[in-house]
Length: 66
Image (cartoon, rainbow, N blue to C red; front, side):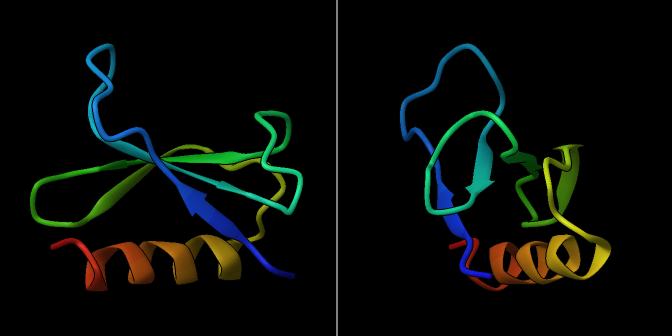
């Protein structure tokens, strides 16, 4: 499955977070990861992702935090 990651660079309502979605890029079924300053994540919403996909996304975000 192809997963798209996207974020809003100037969101002032919430802490920095990344959305993960399928090709439809819709809020429905998407996951939400809050990203800490050290690059670690807290999963706010899993959407349709399984454990392996969540782990892979967390690793990707951590590796590309800068």
